[in-house]
Image (cartoon, rainbow, N blue to C red; front, side, top):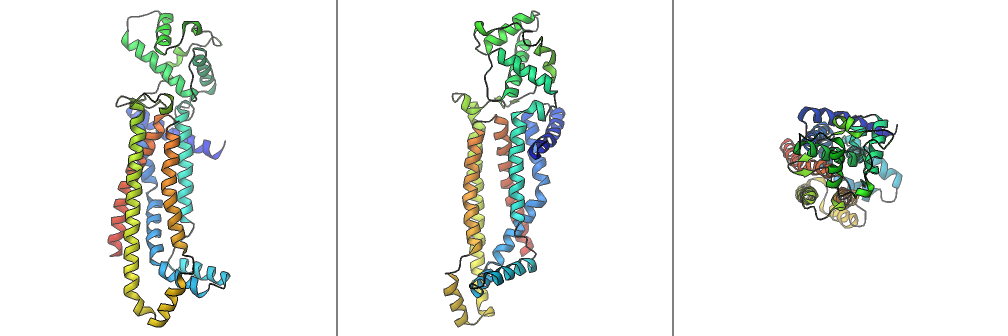
Length: 343
């Protein structure tokens, strides 16, 4: 079992527990997003504090870079000593990035194959169910989602006409509802003597979220306006998150420059300070480079995510939307707490 499969299975147990608790896939994803965000709080807290510290030591790092610009080894030693003195871990940002990638891939696998990872249904039943709906003419890039849609159609048909007892007629109505031609219709037990209706309770997942079917893939039917609502909200929340992050970073940089200007006279004499300032412009600022990289990534990740969300079941876009909303509140709260601690 691969690492991604392990996490997809682990998250599947959690999501299934939440689903069994409330009976709705959409609300289960919202609670799942909240739970993951709470578990990630210690890492987010450490990352925010590290970012604040890195801005504080920026001025001192520039002086080290200038002082040892001709001795790369000594420069690295002094920078590492600075990190150690300030109790900063330069690799802490990598941990958060790795976790985000693991979450992205694992949740995608979970939403793509909920029968496997969430409901833990026997692989043979899934295989026969997929084969069955394919023989009925179902076509999708996500076989397990096709099975869930088929079962949902059966549930709808049975709720519309509870008195209808003829199973073959029910199957025919479901097929017509899915716009499958009569020539493609087969007997309900034509696939390895497998009747999917015997397992409909196991295979059924309530994907209805305020009238939006979370099993839908936006690009499969661009005329379905409902399927575009969640991706659009995700894009809006991404831009709000980026804007908020940019504004916070700009304010921190302005404060750092202001504090640095006030303290220069206490640290060095005017002549040496001017010399350092003139030469620092020639030395690459690692923090500025890091900030530039983070800025590019802050735009790249939403663009990549929306590209994936448009070709994946809507459950994934809902998870990312909730993650964005929670991230916005998290940044506001953590930034306020850290700011108060600094004062």
